[in-house]
Length: 111
Image (cartoon, rainbow, N blue to C red):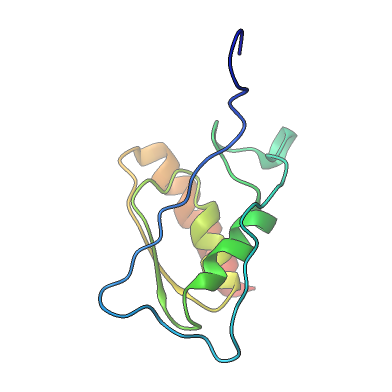
Protein backbone atom coordinates (compact mmCIF):
# COMPACT_ATOMS: atom_id res chain seq x y z
CA UNK A 1 0.00 0.00 0.00
CA UNK A 2 1.44 3.37 -0.94
CA UNK A 3 2.98 5.07 2.11
CA UNK A 4 1.85 2.26 4.39
CA UNK A 5 1.97 -1.42 5.18
CA UNK A 6 1.00 -4.22 2.84
CA UNK A 7 -2.29 -5.89 3.64
CA UNK A 8 -0.99 -9.39 4.15
CA UNK A 9 -2.41 -10.65 7.39
CA UNK A 10 -5.63 -11.63 9.08
CA UNK A 11 -6.33 -11.97 12.75
CA UNK A 12 -7.86 -14.87 14.63
CA UNK A 13 -10.31 -14.44 17.47
CA UNK A 14 -10.19 -17.18 20.07
CA UNK A 15 -12.67 -17.35 22.91
CA UNK A 16 -13.83 -19.68 25.60
CA UNK A 17 -16.70 -19.84 28.04
CA UNK A 18 -15.12 -20.22 31.45
CA UNK A 19 -11.58 -21.39 32.06
CA UNK A 20 -9.58 -22.14 28.91
CA UNK A 21 -9.13 -25.81 28.14
CA UNK A 22 -5.75 -27.15 29.23
CA UNK A 23 -4.36 -29.59 26.69
CA UNK A 24 -2.55 -32.67 27.89
CA UNK A 25 0.08 -32.75 26.51
CA UNK A 26 0.31 -28.97 26.19
CA UNK A 27 -0.21 -27.54 22.70
CA UNK A 28 2.16 -24.80 21.54
CA UNK A 29 1.02 -22.99 18.42
CA UNK A 30 3.21 -20.45 16.65
CA UNK A 31 2.20 -16.81 16.83
CA UNK A 32 2.49 -16.47 13.08
CA UNK A 33 1.26 -18.99 10.54
CA UNK A 34 2.04 -18.60 6.86
CA UNK A 35 0.47 -20.21 3.84
CA UNK A 36 -0.61 -19.52 0.29
CA UNK A 37 -4.21 -19.10 -0.74
CA UNK A 38 -5.57 -21.84 -2.96
CA UNK A 39 -5.29 -21.15 -6.68
CA UNK A 40 -6.97 -22.40 -9.81
CA UNK A 41 -9.69 -25.05 -9.47
CA UNK A 42 -9.15 -25.41 -5.70
CA UNK A 43 -9.98 -21.75 -5.00
CA UNK A 44 -13.71 -21.50 -4.42
CA UNK A 45 -13.95 -18.22 -2.49
CA UNK A 46 -12.21 -14.87 -2.84
CA UNK A 47 -10.88 -14.95 0.75
CA UNK A 48 -10.39 -18.72 1.03
CA UNK A 49 -7.76 -19.67 3.60
CA UNK A 50 -5.05 -22.33 3.19
CA UNK A 51 -6.21 -25.66 4.63
CA UNK A 52 -2.76 -26.32 6.11
CA UNK A 53 -2.94 -23.11 8.16
CA UNK A 54 -6.50 -23.75 9.32
CA UNK A 55 -5.64 -27.32 10.39
CA UNK A 56 -3.03 -25.87 12.73
CA UNK A 57 -5.35 -23.18 14.09
CA UNK A 58 -8.23 -25.50 14.99
CA UNK A 59 -5.89 -27.51 17.21
CA UNK A 60 -6.40 -24.88 19.93
CA UNK A 61 -9.82 -26.49 20.47
CA UNK A 62 -9.65 -29.77 22.38
CA UNK A 63 -10.20 -33.00 20.41
CA UNK A 64 -13.97 -33.34 20.07
CA UNK A 65 -14.36 -29.64 20.93
CA UNK A 66 -16.45 -27.23 18.91
CA UNK A 67 -15.05 -24.81 16.32
CA UNK A 68 -17.42 -21.97 15.35
CA UNK A 69 -17.01 -20.01 12.12
CA UNK A 70 -19.64 -17.26 11.81
CA UNK A 71 -18.44 -16.40 8.27
CA UNK A 72 -17.98 -19.88 6.81
CA UNK A 73 -17.52 -18.97 3.15
CA UNK A 74 -16.38 -22.06 1.28
CA UNK A 75 -15.87 -24.08 4.48
CA UNK A 76 -12.11 -24.32 4.91
CA UNK A 77 -12.29 -23.88 8.70
CA UNK A 78 -14.97 -26.57 8.91
CA UNK A 79 -12.99 -28.96 6.76
CA UNK A 80 -9.93 -28.38 8.95
CA UNK A 81 -11.94 -28.91 12.14
CA UNK A 82 -13.43 -32.20 10.94
CA UNK A 83 -10.08 -33.50 9.67
CA UNK A 84 -8.52 -32.65 13.06
CA UNK A 85 -11.24 -34.43 15.07
CA UNK A 86 -13.21 -31.38 16.17
CA UNK A 87 -16.91 -30.63 15.82
CA UNK A 88 -17.89 -27.69 13.61
CA UNK A 89 -20.66 -25.12 13.48
CA UNK A 90 -20.64 -22.78 10.51
CA UNK A 91 -22.82 -19.83 9.54
CA UNK A 92 -22.98 -18.53 5.97
CA UNK A 93 -25.52 -16.12 4.50
CA UNK A 94 -24.78 -16.80 0.83
CA UNK A 95 -26.69 -19.85 -0.46
CA UNK A 96 -23.99 -20.39 -3.10
CA UNK A 97 -21.15 -20.56 -0.59
CA UNK A 98 -23.26 -22.49 1.91
CA UNK A 99 -23.71 -25.20 -0.76
CA UNK A 100 -19.98 -25.27 -1.49
CA UNK A 101 -19.18 -25.51 2.23
CA UNK A 102 -21.78 -28.26 2.74
CA UNK A 103 -20.18 -30.35 -0.03
CA UNK A 104 -16.68 -29.85 1.39
CA UNK A 105 -17.81 -30.80 4.90
CA UNK A 106 -19.56 -33.91 3.63
CA UNK A 107 -16.36 -34.93 1.82
CA UNK A 108 -14.25 -34.22 4.92
CA UNK A 109 -16.54 -36.37 7.10
CA UNK A 110 -16.16 -39.23 4.62
CA UNK A 111 -12.33 -38.98 4.74
